[in-house]
Length: 177
Image (tube, rainbow, N blue to C red; front, side, top):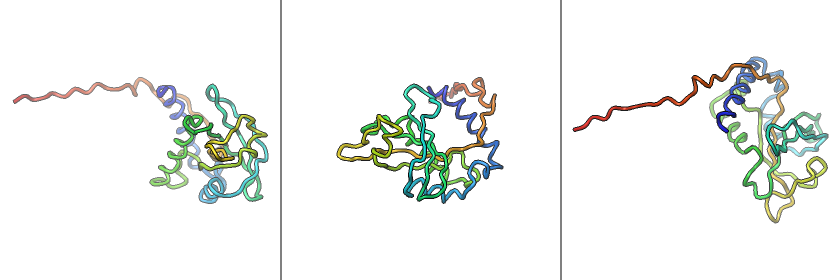
């Protein structure tokens, strides 16, 4: 699985890097504003549809959300299944990768777009995801990841070279006494 993921990731990273000089085309507003909206602002789903599935069972929605009554913009919206043990495509990793990069990169150099985990009422998600259920017992909410949808990313061919990425055998001579 990792070997299939690496070429895709390398291509996406190269595509993002190719547009890094033109971050305004992808992220036209200040990143802290988008982060705050994704994490805390009330929102309304204006539209949502299943995005192109990347794997069997992918339940990612391409959604247009309006935050606090502002103009809508596109996000990736993925819900957790009950218990959150197998959070679809591991969006928690997306959130962790996003937070990690904020520790040492400037917003113009981010590789992962603004991302947040939060809860929303199941009732608000049901029209777009009829199989949505509360993530945890005793709650009427579902955990979701919201990730800003980049418009200008393109995959660059021939970025990943599997021949140069093979594990190299390292031998070390042990001296005896």
